[in-house]
Length: 270
Image (cartoon, rainbow, N blue to C red; front, side, top):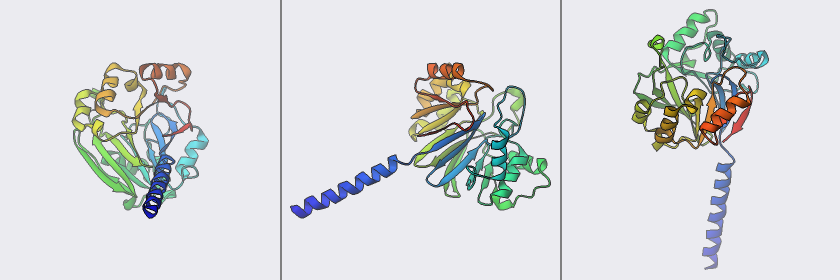
């Protein structure tokens, strides 16, 4: 009996340490600007929509020092495993800093649509990036694909960018598994019940959903989040340049408990 109690005690201690270890993990999201973020957890780093330059009035831009560190792959943006871009629009992607980061960080792999990769090659012709760092994964609307690259599991969802003038834009939505969490980055993709019902993300446990602020504050967006995603944490990104307490209050009024990123280099761990 004593041996049995001892064995049970040992098992309980191991389980307690395992649970404690898991709870001490998680994903740290560092906000850059617009929809640019860095995810870090479990010894891995992923940049999403993070390398861009000034695009047009009304869109935020990270500080010069932050953009320089991103392009040069300097801390805290060193040892990044994956670069992901939802689409080629200039407030999400720019070829020059993207090519520069890949040259400075041979560890990183670019995983995005063929359209973005072609745009990078055209836009930074003097910067040769090794083909092994470029992974084209154009995913047609309504389809999905999943693979593990550089130790990070990524699911790519083909969801079109809304708007007549965006009909030719290849757009990806990502679900990234990192630090024991699943993080959804919705980009600027169409956000309707018809689209998201087909993917049934509500069945796969989304821990953190990174969503444009206009999605979080709209009636249809709220229905999609509640019915077809059901994330543990809602996070609003792509707030207007100069947004502050007023915009944050609007997000939280629409979705109590949501977090709104509006200050570059703000970060949270979930």
